Image (cartoon, rainbow, N blue to C red; front, side, top):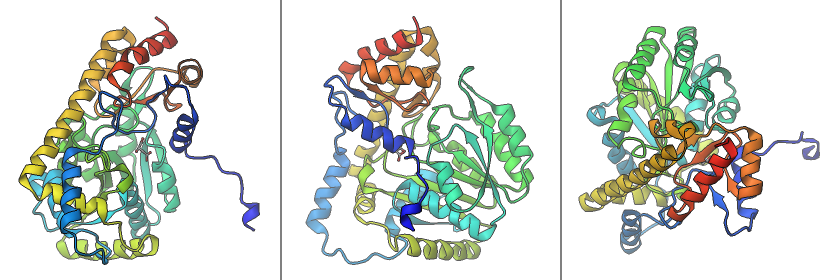
Length: 389
Ligand code: LMR
C-alpha cells in the first residue's frame, strides 16, 4: 500500500531552499541553491532573454507540439558553444531536455539499457542529485574521493587510481567545469591524464556541464569536454542552459551523444527518444525557444555573452574579497564558478544559520553569487568569526 512506503529523506538542497524561504529575518543571506543574484540581491531575467521573450510573444503563431527531440535549431546553435571545432561532427547528436537533470536522467537510463552491468565512477563530493539519478537508472555506483576538504585540493592520485582500476565499459561521471559543489576543477594536464585513461581503459565518460561561462569563460570552460569529445569514441554530455541563460524555472537543457558512427548515434538517440517519451513525452518549449532566439540573432547573442561575462566578473570580485578577508579563505580564488566549499563543520553551518541567518549547504558549499554587494562584508565577517580568526 502507498501508506506502507518507507520514510524518505528530502533532497538536501530542496530542503535547504524550503528552510531559507521560511526564515523571515530581514538580514537573511541565502547562499544555498545555485542561483545568480546581482549587486542588489535580485535574480533578474537577463536582458537578452527578456528581449527574446518579447520577440517570441510577437512572432509565435502556435504552441502546437514540437516533437520529442525539442527545438532542433537550439541544439544546432548550442553545438559550437559546447564542442567548438567538433560542432560539425555528425557522430554527435542531441535532443532537448527539461534542464541538465533531464539530460542526466536520460543519459544514465540509456547507459543502463546498453550495459546494465556498467558501474558508474563518481568522485565525492558531488551534486546531491547525481547519485539518486544514477541509482534510479539501476546502475551501480563506485565512489572515489575527488576533493580533500582539509587540504583544499583535488585528490588527483586517488581519482587516477579509481579510473585506472575501472572495468572496460564502466562509466566515469565528470564535471565539465565549475565543479559542483567544490569549485575545484581539473587543470589542463589533469584533463589530459583523465582522457588518456578513459581511452586506455575503454571507459564511457558522462560529462555534466551546467555552468559553462561562469568559470574562466565560455571557450575556456569547454576545454575538458572538447578533449573528451576528440579522444573518446563514445561520450554522453548533459548540458544545462538554466544558469548561463538564467532560465532556471524554464528548465532548459540538452543531452548530446557521440558514438563511433553517425548511424549508431542515430540509433542511440532513438532509444533516448523512447525513454523520454515514457518520461515526459516532449520537452517544454518556452525556455528552449528563448535560447534559440538569443543565439540565432547576432546582436542578442553578443549581449548574452556580455551578460555571462558580467556574471563571471561578479564571481571573481567576490572570490577576491573573501580570499583577502582571512588566510584560511585564500584558496577561494583558485576555484571556478558559482560554488566554493568552506572549511566548516556541519555544526558551524548550523551556527551560521541560527546566529547569522546565513544559509548554506551542510557540506559548507555556498553560492558565491548568492549575496548582494552590501551583504558581502557581513557574510565574510560571520564566516571569519565562525571559522576562528
Ligand atoms: C544547485 O546545485 O544548487 C542547482 O543545481 C540547483 C539544483 O537543482 O540542485
